Length: 281
View: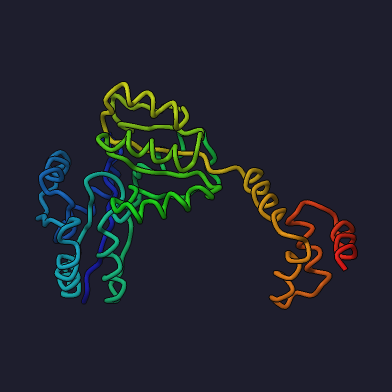
């Protein structure tokens, strides 16, 4: 009978956030797959957990996932932990989870801390709609594509960044998005936790003058829906109403509905659309 894969969330700083269920599961499983065994051994020792560990990280995630999947299929119960927070979020654990699903293995998650959600809830920015980007890609072309998408993003944006890349990332965000409200979070749940509401440009100037320290979560406001609407209306103004109508009619949309959509796009009445069409004839 196959075993199970347990995704076990660990504290992002404060050891008091370790849940009793995670401790019990880590004691019960046959093997713990850890992102960095040197870091995780300290956590396990603190809670008196003596389960064997194996490394599972970015550089061995494919071959190790194959091995772990085989062991679980053979009956072993395996727990996956990351250095801090919830496994498989901006983390190589997603590869193992996918392989387990493909093999028909049961995967269950033991919820706990996640830096992205912790930062979002204390940011003071909108929480109803948000998107998580993790770390921006290292590849320049891929990063530019992501930033181009974020220009149009109306949801609150959550990013991770290391201290030695923070100034560069703030500069790239400022160039791509312009000035936006944002909240910088560092050392979350730790003794010197800092939650700093600011703007992208103000944060950039501050960290150009002082060295960033600690791991950062950047929570950035999305583009306002009003601004998006105004930009869309402006773009429609650049083409004649007749051409605007044809873009809908070639999709098989009837003339009455097309007029309604053109009026909505341009922020005018259907009567004005009709009048323009008459004048064009």
